[in-house]
Image (tube, rainbow, N blue to C red; front, side, top):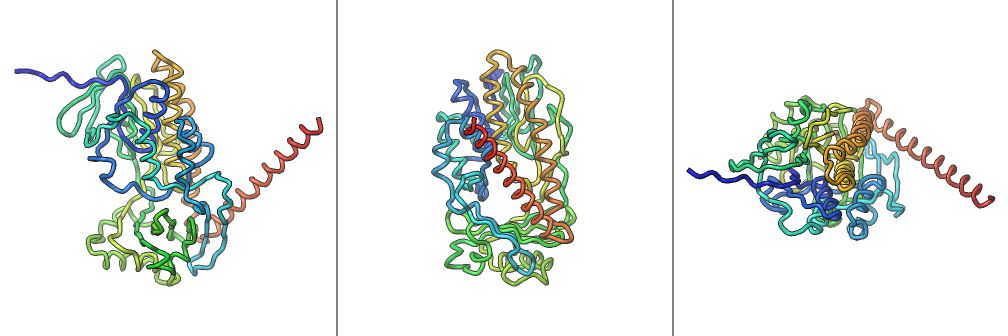
Length: 401
């Protein structure tokens, strides 16, 4: 009987999402090879989601560290930062145009992922390799089991494998919990021609039409389609009672929650093309962290899954990847020092973002919605004006000196 020696990698990343790919890219830039394993059969195996606003202080900083900032700028959706807040009667309560300052430009998630993939050496990502579990071997080494029964070993294991991470149990017993909110996603392609009314409601960027415990969130994508999320505060099992293989019945079940909403908003679901996609929103505990475990760490949703209401998920995953890569490059030969330095910064940052996300979810769907969100935007504007005034004063004092 012969035994096969397991494949061994010095650095193994589980998950080829934005965070895992950013990590692999920053390691590559610094001359460190990483092997990335992903359960998808290929890069094109499934749709990558809609638009992302990439924040200057996080996602954009990560792309600069990856040496991809200029290429990223070519992917920006002009006008995508425009925002509209409506009430349930479709009355526009706030409108912000895209001023083109680039602070939070919108890009399509799939294009951003392709940019990262294209920046890596051929063969970096092993497609169709689902990790089913992992165990420590001692001295910081780990063994990872794949769905096909094969195993690999590694000196450093990074879980970038999302909400239901198979690597997380190595460091934490925490599991995602239902947030109380469910999404039902829909698409309206070629909106300006086929769905002009819906195109007008959504506008050129982001739409938030909110009421008590429910609402419609939508955005215009680069191909001219509209992607719409119906948000409902419902019991966790509510989605199980809907047959989503029958699109007409599914639409009716969703619209039952919006009987007195304006027809133009109901049309975002009623006129959608193709099947509706249900999605429960789960979160890890705010402030999730773990004691240092030799040879393994987490990034992105695997480390700090939160609701999308701070707009930080993808941005933090990329920043995690960039900072972890930089820490490993800065501590050659001392992996534990690198992981400790990374986690020391990542934990408080993610706790702050998760707390903001949890609070924003509550604010968005208050009984007086959308007033809470309007107040929040007004606060952001006041803060921005104060910061601009402070910068102007400092500049004036510097010039006077």
